[in-house]
Amino acid sequence: MGTPSLARLHTLEDPAVPGLGELLRDGGNLWRAAGHDFEGDAPPVQVRWQPGRSMVVRYETRPSDDAPASAFVAQAGGRMPEGVAVLRSELGEVGVWPVTSDPGLPGLGVALDPQAVREMLAPLGVPRGPVALRLRAYRPGRRAVVEATMGGHRFFVKVLRPSRIEALQLRHRALEGILPVPASHGWSSDLGLVVLEARRGATLREALVRGEAIPHPREIRDLLTHLPNLEDGRTAASQAASGVAHIDLVRRLAPEATRALEGYDVASAMGASTQAVTVHGDLHESQLLVEDGRLVAMLDVDTAGLGDPRDDWATFLGHLHVRALDATGDERRRTAAYALQVAGVLLEQAETDRERAQVEARVAAVILGLATGPFAVMAPDWAELTDRRVDLAVRWLRGEGLVFLDDLARDGAAAGAEGR
Image 1 (cartoon, rainbow, N blue to C red):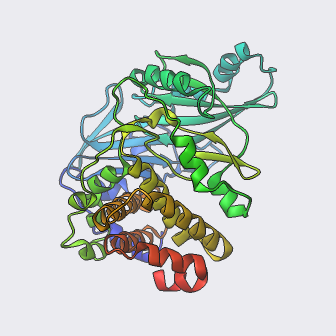
Image 2 (cartoon, rainbow, N blue to C red):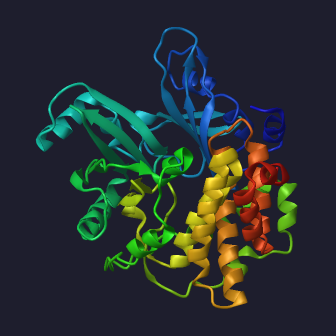
Image 3 (tube, rainbow, N blue to C red):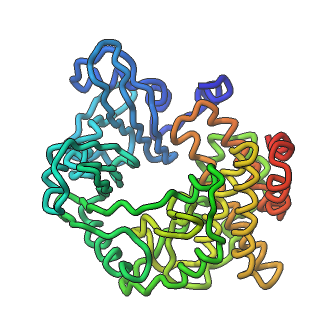
């Protein structure tokens, strides 16, 4: 970890998590104290910190001998999950569990077991053979996605809390035939598993990186207009509202940069959500698959529900602007240029200066939520990245976001030097 990030890490504290510093350094001692014969270190690779409440950290072991690597989770503060090993010391209670035994995701161990997945895929007519598994996404206690390949066929096993599986299955059924969403090949409410087809195409993010043909944002807008009423009254999570909820954490992670937020009430600046139509809920460039310049699939529709369509587009634009800021050269210019197109679609909905300011505040809120991302994955330069994203959010609050985005599109290298 870089010197600035390491120095800032040592300043973090939280009375609700008295062992915060220890949790963020190395988990090897925790793993040994939980009864595992282990020599080596276990750096943190994923952190979820809710200041004043709890911290959950995922570690990946790096054995000093020939023992296989493993992954485990530790939680301090909050309601401790049932059935996990609880360590008690002067630093308080810490719960520890292997990733494969996540107490909130009983199906994860199954989804990461090659033999179990082989049997799961057999009824689908997949030729039997070696199974390759890859954990593509994981949020302890909340969700996971495992990529499974067997007999030349590829699937995704989505793992959720069992109580959420039926709603996910119903969403896929409601959207199949209307939108290009992955088909569901079976599900288990007891284990919290859904087997989804792997759709063809590259993510829009990958296409931007490689400079391939991509659809105009209007094509995406037209697709979203076909989202049907799901008739369950469920509200989609707003990524803009989530960003506002992250402000306390952002202030702790970037105390100097967030001084520029003084005087801004981001929640009030966003205004009230005036529309309640079906939205995706987490629209960004990795949720869309493209092929030969056409949109061929939309992923992760379990987030769909009633919401404000401005939030979908603010999320899309916020992600793209952060990507452009972090990229260099042609990739930066391509991403920024595409973000400008997305901004055009978003701002079409703003008929007055006040409405435009509300839209810009929503983009700023999304970026503030993304500002915690580098810390969450323990990026070596998380402190610098967080500061840059806070600065970007402030530009949007000041009404300068589009100008800066245009600079990135025109001259990526020069604008990048200015942005840093």
